[in-house]
Image (spheres, rainbow, N blue to C red):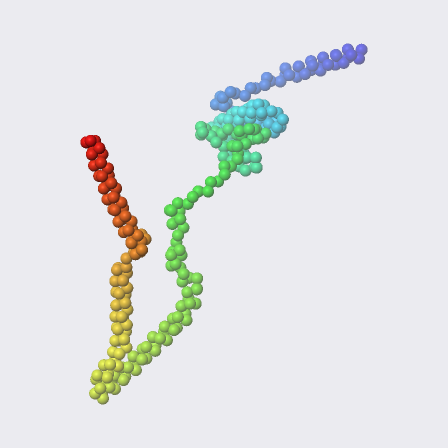
Length: 297
């Protein structure tokens, strides 16, 4: 009896479930094209449905033991759903709804860094990889950053970094020259003051000499120092001219020159060669005459 009662109970449960399903409306299927939807609420509902499907598949693709083929199929399905979600988001905007595309998640690499998704077509999001699909052969290399090649600097790059400080135009700003020029300037100022005082003394003596009638001595006193300067400049100019003349006359030897012994040896060898050639030519002529004589007999 127990088994029949259990069967009846089971049949009753199935009957009740069937009646409840009959009372419910038939399940609506998501339109194949988003443009067929005319209601904003319906469009938002289908978008939420696609989001739930994406969430389930993304959770499933985290399992690395599914195998390469299953992981690739799941990744393709997720990308297909993402493209469909983009169509519905665009349709929601057309119907006057909110713009969900601004809040879309970014793609990250294995280390969690945001990467750009390549999309040659330029329409919608590009192909993405999720979960264990990022570690598939041929995919991991896409997320690895290529090594940075050290680019050789060109002449333009080198000269672009050169400023006024490179040519020494800002040496006055570091304060080093100020410390060095201070004592030198003071010494030069003292020398200039002494020279001026000496010239003033010479002028005073010249005026006294003019009054006393000693004109020649006054002239010597006034121009003694100037003549010394002119004479020194003349000597310096002559010395430079002599150096220029010597420099022009200087002969630069680019090849080694033979000495006397080497020249004598070369002359002797040349004479030997001349004598040897004469001797060989005389012997050759004698042999030819002897051969002619023999042929005549």
